[in-house]
Image (cartoon, rainbow, N blue to C red; front, side):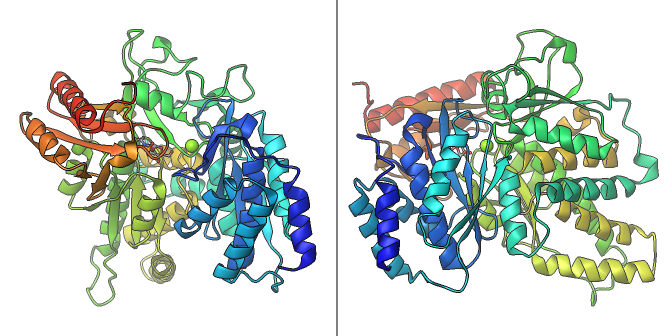
Length: 559
Ligand SMILES: CC(=O)N[C@H]1[C@@H](OP(=O)(O)O)O[C@H](CO)[C@@H](O)[C@@H]1O
Ligand SMILES: [Mg+2]
């Protein structure tokens, strides 16, 4: 690092004073805190992004958002060159610089890291960073802090992409690095064109809904997703979508609205009520990377019927499996490519969904919580479908499978034009363009759900009947030190403290269809307990008993 670079860093960092008494951690979803204390953190993440860009010689993204958290919070996360999450290998560096106590210490940490990672400081290509933010009022000032961080690396360029959903920013980073068209307009066009292509390929005998209302009502969480969906809606012209709780309405971001609220509380969001009974409803989270569907019950105050991430995954799996079977039909074995379709879930997936998927003959894999783990696993397959129960997920297509599909669809169109196999190949290609290949994306998710329902001729009721969720319960337990809980086997088994897993096993064995696991949260200072059993009452008893065991083994933090 030359003297010019050192003084630029010392000078700019002296403008961003680190808050006292806060220990920041990059965690599963980047840094998240009350927005008022975040500017030094975001500034430092700007520096990290520029270094990452130099190291990878690629465009990097910085997104300012705190997703489903309250409006006074904010946060920041990085999009890596492929549009995915920051490489886990760099997370400790993010933690270290975010907590550096002075400009001198910050400079020293950067210097050491640059040497260790052999970052080409005066390399061929200057750093280039795309900055995006959600609708939070604190976003504009924090974006400026990120820009100052980026430009404190000599030659680095920061482009302000404005207000975006998190998945849009990830999509842009991926597209830029693949040399593809990458503007917001390009995003909307790609989604709407591939949606129209799937609509055109719907079998005519199925193109009628089974007697159901065609309308979809979407809760935009008073965040960025609602307005963006309206832009898409205008381009599409064929879907009947009404958006409520758009950021242009009066309501407060994530306050009694949004996918996280609907999924956790199982109640209708603000603005929805018994007048909407029977209508297909969906909810996005604050930065539009999560999606759940739901049905409002006719009686007010009753729980909504939740159609969660597991059921979206199941719908996608049924559709993809059907297309693969069309492709393999009449296929002589020499030319066929038996595509590997893999499903990825976490232990929070409802057991009924896992059983359903296994009964379809699909390979179901489990990873720890956090989309970075699910995404990584899904990328091992020709087609990998991953979802968290809370509604974050997508379908990944391997590059080699896309190439195979392109060749196949060309071959088929010259031979048996209009065949089911040709249509199946074209549908799969359209899905790969519609569904975000970088991260879970509620906007592309809505469009894919809608077109698959039309393709199947299914109402939301029919879809919801694919399987019946087992009763489940989630509890949070505050303990003295949640890091004392160490788990294995995709978080389903506690290995420390000793004895806790045996006690959980003994309790769980008392319940029909009982399943229970505990793990430390990566985003909150709690241990989470998850339980399932054959009735809601039994499930609640199991969850409460295991919560008591957790306190017995770990000590409560209030005592
Ligand atoms: C049970 C649950 O919903 N956990 C969420 C939550 O993680 P925890 O580590 O459980 O706090 O936040 C993560 C980031 O948004 C999300 O990926 C995950 O699914
Ligand atoms: Mg989110």
